[in-house]
Image (cartoon, rainbow, N blue to C red):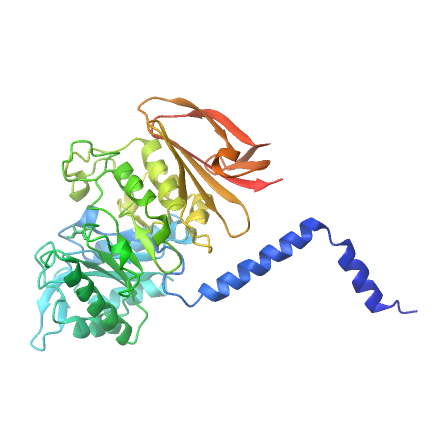
Amino acid sequence: MYPDVKHNIFESLLILSKMQYKLLAALLLVSMITFAQGNKLAATPPMGWMSWNIMSENPNEKDIREMADAMANSGMVKAGYQYIFLDDCWQGGRDNKNNIIADPRKFPSGIKALADYLHNKGMKLGIYSDAAPLTCGGYTASFNFEEQDAKTFASWGIDYLKYDYCNAPEDVETAKKRYTTIAQALRKSGRDIILGICEWGPREPWNWGAEVGGQSWRTTYDIRDKWMDIENEGGVGIYNVVDKMSGLAAFSGPGKWNDGDMLVAGLHGTKGPSAAYKGIGCTKAEYQSQMSLYSMLNSPLYASCDIRKMDDEAKNILTNEEVIALNQDVLGKQAERKIKTDSWDIFVRPLVNGDFAIAILNKSATAQNAKVNFVELGLAGKYEIRDLWQHKVIGKNNKWTGEVMAHETRVFRLKKV
Ligand code: GLA
């Protein structure tokens, strides 16, 4: 009456198709990687919103709470944005025990209350300090108070520290020492606090950032709301950052990220730091390119526009979950630039489930036709091509030809067929 169970299992194993075996193997790999990286700080690039570009000198609890509400209501939190970063200018000096305090006019309820508010919404709080006595904005910073400040941050419930380098000595050895000191202080604080190194690139922090205990490091000076700086004016644009980060793929991986600075989508030339050095705003294609390329290149994703008033264009760019999935892919392999010509940059990144993502950027000032043979990118055979901005499969092929607008990036997910 009962069939031979052993025999049946054997038979069903045999009839599992090759496809199903591949799927099982991929699932196993994903679970192994997720397990191995699960405990790492910043196992995938952190995502959030930073106060600097629109609040600069005046971050305050009322606006920050409104921003957190807007992040939740706009779908950004669902899309993966988790952190609110209080950038410079929140500080109010030190009390009579030398504990760092927030400016009571800006934060009458205190920073802990703000952290609680965010944690209750499933969000996290980042804060800012500097490796010198004063920050870039001239506010109280943490040099010589590292352990005390780290303990204070932990007691407030801080989840991330952006640690700047204004007013500190220029040499690389001192920088390494100062970042080591704060990293150790954070580790001793009793709370998991991510360390974001922000020395802007001159001391090549990708060479030593992970070793001293950082989870990310800025690769350039501050980004402005523009495509490119061509006059060496001092303010970098989107493409300057992308170009710089393209050479740094080897340094990026789970728990150690090259940081391209804030996303500028939605700013449209808004007054403030991002408008300096002719930051007059970008086209939709350019804002979209930044999102696509930062996702390919594993940059942390920090929105910086006023989310309370964000237009649909910015919202669609910032919450494209198919593009974000590249950024958050647990394999954490930064894209490699496989082709660089005057007009084109073409990037490829492998994904944990065996797919590949490719990004095709037209750098020229006019629309151009692209002809991309996948084999030239190291991808032999035929693929199902899914357009991650159109959200649909556009064909099965071993190549793609089509139009790319000026400064636009087409992003495809390729699945082997
Ligand atoms: C530096 C950083 C910016 C911002 C400001 C604040 O310029 O690079 O991202 O934090 O300081 O003063």
